[in-house]
Image (tube, rainbow, N blue to C red; front, side, top):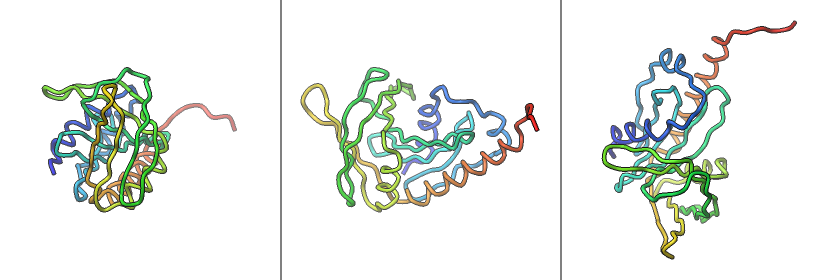
Length: 186
């Protein structure tokens, strides 16, 4: 597993026009932690994430906004898409197969490669599948050519990584709540 590669790609992949929480990132100083084939860390913007990278260099990640505590699943692959477009997908694991919709959320570059962000719907279902798996999780999506693109990711360590991600997001949320200022009517 190339956790340094995951961190570098994930940092670029997670820059998506989210609410900046730079103060939290500076305050947190969280080192990357590895759980099996998954890594948990913060982006430069302070967004906590858990990510796995497969042998083709594609990434599957869950990231959370520490202010709102909302989380999304994103797949970063080199198959191009138009921002805002949607595509059906089949998620497969030892637990079974599930239908999902992927939403294109733009592209980013890392080194010589251009990746496209595909946000997955039904994050709770994806949580339960990935966290219950210990082997491989696969995503299949149709291509315009009539073929399918299939990506596979190791789920080894995913449960521990996602649990750590949730704890990290909650801790950053607590820090955020303590540092917010503003007016309040009593």
